Image (cartoon, rainbow, N blue to C red; front, side, top):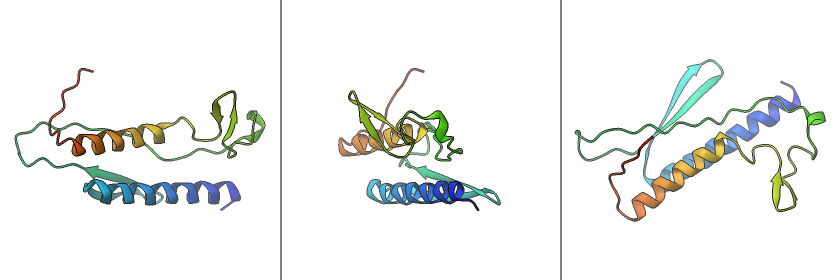
Length: 120
């Protein structure tokens, strides 16, 4: 495995550990499902006490693709701030959306909101 793959694997491992910790904090059900030899899916579930409640699926991904540093204006893993903006690998990606989902669940639980309706 080359350095880029090692770095990607380490980043994914650290993020999965973060998700597992958040899962415990939010008291969600956590399952790791093997998709194929090299890929797994983490499924977090917030179960209702009623079997008649409707379900809502929130989907995000944490995989990464190779970095081509020649295409970057800053080192991709620097998290450099310029003009009030953060530049770097992963500063805006589906990982952000996954964190937003967890934060929404956290706030709903704090305020004991069990039902949420949305128009899509």
